[in-house]
Image (cartoon, rainbow, N blue to C red; front, side, top):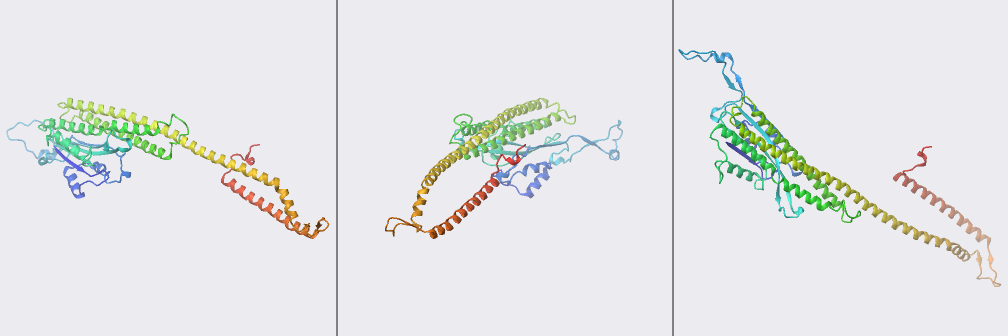
Length: 443
């Protein structure tokens, strides 16, 4: 068994390998080109991570190709040996390199899986103090059905975090009898043992993807519950509801939706992995379809169990998304009601101020004649100061001058007021057109 681990410090950082070394590694092992698409997801900023990218690719070369007749005739029969009529010799369709344990009959698999891990805080901490990360891992596997040569290539991020590359490497070492491992867990004595061990590694990869989903969904449920538990119940106009709460609810809803997408992608990859081995076990060119049928059946059954477990978590996440969406819509309506209530309060305040102004205007109107008379008698139209007999004097000249000045100014005031009112009303109609227009009324 040969294993190659390519890692990065973080999923958003470049892999710890140079392009020339990567090309040499992939060329030496004749890795299928699809693996390039999987490792290309690294070195992207967190906001641009291709978390939705997933896939499963396989390449199977188990059949033989017939040797042309002229090549077969170049092999003379042994002397004094009866030679029956034999078929033309067959050669594997794949490249044969005996020194590297390559018989030319092999299959390749390339897929990726994702999991969640709590990288900061603990499950007992408040939801705002917890930080969860969606981690992905790319797997490439080759198996030679004649020589038993096995290759595993894995690309991961977050070397020292929980569920990261170091955790995965230690698990592989344990399975293969490395550092403080269990030597009998995986054996490679025969071709059948190599095949059984490859199934065990597949299961280890799938189990890696199933970890912590229950805790992550519980974290989302607690967070959304604390933010929205008072939305469907309690008073309608709750001052606790702010746009910040709506923003937090939206963020957790997006996380729940992403969880649904990741769960579905894991289910699809595991389903394709199961279908591949189901087809492999009925392939007539696969030499271990009879000797390893029991192990393959157990492997397929365990894959089915994990797929069903993912289906349960997906239903839980989809229900959480629906509840969050409904509560978010109700929260938005309550925020709109709060805004409407504030506008009503402002309108009421303006109405009260208008009433006060009307009272002042009415009082001014009542006292306007007296003010006018007092002002009129203080002019030179009527004079009492210089009269000796107690009678006043009246001047038509002063009266005419007063009328000539007052009436034009009064008329001009009315004209200016009317024009200003008309302009303001037209501007209001353009900005806020009426929902009921007499001109458009049906006859």
